[in-house]
View 1 (cartoon, rainbow, N blue to C red):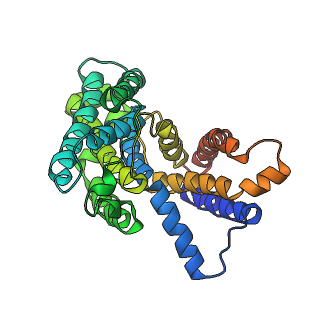
View 2 (cartoon, rainbow, N blue to C red):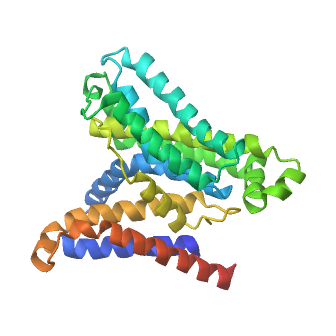
View 3 (cartoon, rainbow, N blue to C red):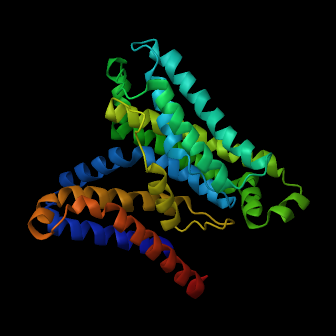
Length: 316
């Protein structure tokens, strides 16, 4: 039922923005082009949403994902361009992303710092490191790396989705690991008594987010060709809104990967629709319609949580 609500919301958004933005869907080709654009635009958010879903299942949260992706991209951009980039910058970025994610997990698991405080601290710390690495420069070595830009297209994103969401998601749903994470999110004390290695699982979950942050950095830099230290500011808000809108409970013990997937597209359609409605907004509104983005994101978050709560009470 919750998935149907998201599908209905997606359709309503497309209809609304088509009416005021002039988006044309006269043929299957138009629809396919529109979907490809959405996929390329939101590819780096999709994989972070998967990681955030798993984190929220454990009653945690990761506010550092935007800074993490930016730092990985900045470090990769500091390496020499050319063919050597593949065997220097890319492995370094992957290892760094795992380390950053594991650091978040270690702060929470071993130092017993609340997730929201730990990741708020690392969000600021990682962002500061972005400026340490590249300063105020805009780095763009990615255009000179052979075949690198191909990762910004929809075909590689579809392949990654099939591997991560398809293969990984299927294994995840059937795994004991998932059941232990749900138990951990439902009651951490009971999970310990049940023999769940709580500290290890927390570190694994946040390291997973780090690995997905690397993939997100790869897709983002391939599509945008450059990176600045302030890149992707506010990305964590989009990811959290998408995941919560998708039906994952912030208090832990429940999560929906499919719901998070649809939640990302709800936000992508909203952003694309606002861009397409610029002319309509200039004619009918006393302010730029793009300024409504965060107003609508906040409204979507509150309305989505309320609807999920009502559906849960009625059908759960």
